[in-house]
Image 1 (cartoon, rainbow, N blue to C red):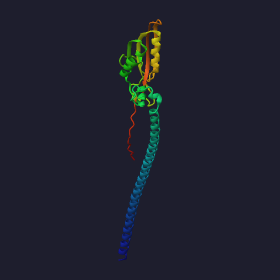
Image 2 (image 1 turned 60 degrees about the vertical axis):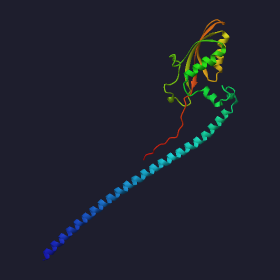
Image 3 (image 1 turned 120 degrees about the vertical axis):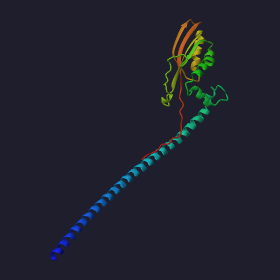
Image 4 (image 1 turned 180 degrees about the vertical axis):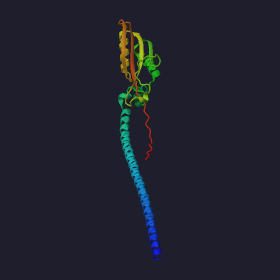
Length: 230
């Protein structure tokens, strides 16, 4: 009977040890799961904090840009008002009803207007001196290589004026040729003579010349939006 009780006691101890091991194993698993959850939670909090900081930084940058734009708009408005009241610009208006700002656009257009340039030279500027125009060509019409513009105007810097060239031939007296060059110099649109050749006498000269004028591609200003991802 005593041996039977001892066997039962030993069996009970082994069961208790086994149960204790199971319990410890469950506690270890629980602790590991809890630790993993805490690690994931901490990592999520750090990512969320970094994302929030990124949003705050973007908002701060946007606010700074808007404040700068408002200040630039005030400055631009002041400059435009000054141009509208500029008496020098008003004195060279082609039409008295035109705005003085149109003079600025006429002086520096926003596109390579070869046809308008040729028409202005042929009908307005060159005839003033009394010369006889024998030939006139602009880039794209005669195949001349004088133009110094990029293939894509949008690729040029915003403050860089591009050039468009022309060739001309004319005959006249020395005084007429001289007046023609003065007329080209006095135009509202800047014209730079890059080459010139004279043949003949004072009373009968033949001139061949080439030059460039300038234009500034227009820029579009518009509001945009940017998505910030975590």
